[in-house]
Image (tube, rainbow, N blue to C red; front, side, top):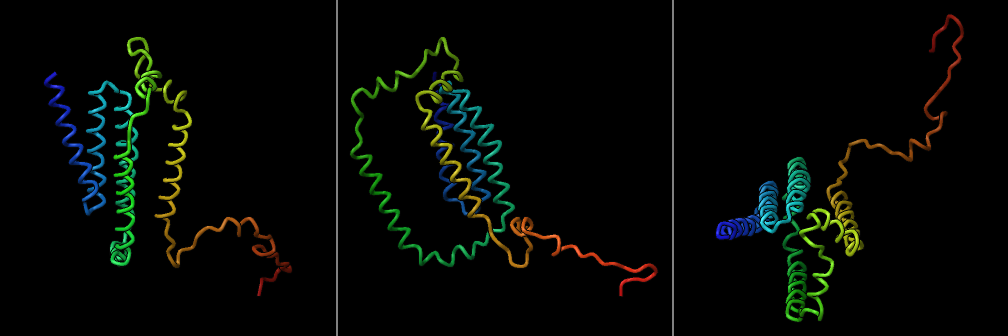
Length: 205
């Protein structure tokens, strides 16, 4: 029991430090590396809680795919940091105002939060018996029955975030020829093909 408690505090401390470094690191590559460390420590905490399936998914999906993909994208993108900093002074008042509004909303929400009557019973009701149902099966039954619409909503949010990331990173470079699908479909034979009748023994002048 003491060993589990020590491991918990060790993983939690590293997780908090890694999450803080993700935000404060100036180099985007370093931020992604700190993010990978945070994911690994989160997986360790899930193992301590007995949720080995969530730990495996966190390592395989987020560390093995998403975080590594972020790292490659950040390294391959030619980010112009000077252009980002040019409008920093002008956007600072708006950013401060938005931050104050969000902080006020969080304070009001936390200050007025209270647990509803019967909330504890509702939280325990969908939980299957751990002795008779495996962890993965219990999680699947809860997600795809009681929280199906919330699960689909989370997928929709991820889809919107993916489309937004593509639009933000998609830049047009002058002088680069791009494929125009509409122009290819509307292309006529007369515009690209010319037939010349050449007499026998003569060439084209």
